Length: 225
Image (cartoon, rainbow, N blue to C red; front, side):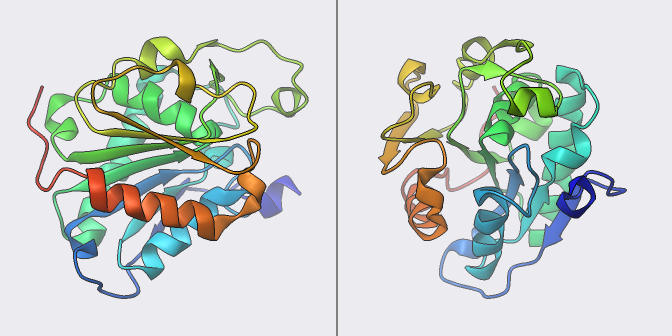
């Protein structure tokens, strides 16, 4: 099963070129970090494909591939920087939306905390979908069973995303979401029906993400801060 999910893939990156060109979408490329089950399970892969189908060239990162061994926060920053460069080249743009799904959302704010200023300027929006309150720097079956202690609380690194617009999406019935704890001047919260899995409704999630991009993404490269 782990092989089918991509645990042993040579590279964690999957490039999804834009399949159409719709008004406004070509201004951005996207980087999406999947949940801990990779891109074949959960909503991460579905969201990445919908972004590409609607005109946003997307570099998806299979978290199961990369995080099957323990990483450091610096490793995560390097992973994100590489994905951002690939996305800009794929989409022929300087503007990138960075998204995470579940475990991937937790890794997004960890990686962005130490992202160099020359890379930060390209990030127009951050979308955290069902982020949790704790951080694990390795994907482990024990973590799936809730039998391993987290590496860190999520709030310290997530609270440092004060340099970019942030959208935090949670399920209405989700008991341990990071979103209610997060307070940023540039934060938009979105609540969708369901629990952590959002009813497995990829269309509803994509609709919320698409609207968030239209409303909140910076129109040009973010100023270096």
